[in-house]
Length: 229
Ligand SMILES: Nc1nc2c(ncn2[C@@H]2O[C@H](COP(=O)(O)OP(=O)(O)OP(=O)(O)O)[C@@H](O)[C@H]2O)c(=O)[nH]1
Ligand SMILES: [Mg+2]
Image: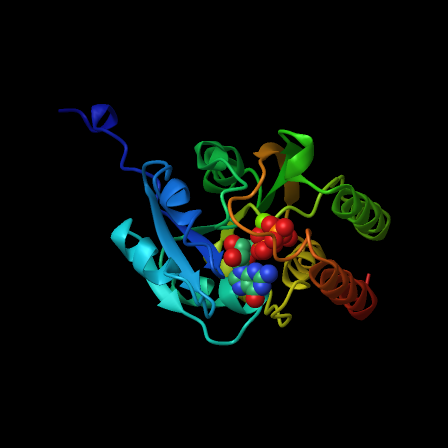
């Protein structure tokens, strides 16, 4: 058979799923993995059966005892081996059938850091205060960087080596913002593509709670001040 007619191997992507008590959501999330995507669930101290459910659904499970979104994602990055890593919440709020929109341009070398710009599928998906906070933050990022970003969404893709080279140090909810600002500073091509945002499965921990929202705002504000333009 001529070389060109051989089937192309599935694109090797490690999908990092930070997870804190998402046992209810995981079967749906892991049941919708696109072909060629290996799931790494990072159990961040869950007290429910997240780890068992994730294993039973075929995912690789690693444990990060240090609490925080950034700590969980970074542990997943360290455990990953694929050239391209994708990141996604484990709460069922994203449709993994759309992951290729985000990872495709990175695999094709057309973007270095691709973000999924969230488009709420209904009003319950994204509380108004979180939407407003996100819009203000995106505006600050546009002014600061000139990047045409409209969301700081958690569904992302980047080459693993490029992410490690950014030496991110936030381990809480400033991590996604630090990634964008440092990627821009490093000269990486940062872009966004629309993805659906659905109501999460299970109880809200961040955007639906006052403590979670305030912590996220504090972490992001610190990050904006800390990183040079
Ligand atoms: N909040 C929080 N989430 C974590 C942590 N570690 C891992 N996660 C996971 O990170 C992802 C994002 O957290 P979410 O709680 O969905 O945050 P959010 O989408 O801003 O807000 P809600 O969905 O309303 O809770 C989920 O998959 C969590 O399970 C942590 O320390 N705190
Ligand atoms: Mg969520």
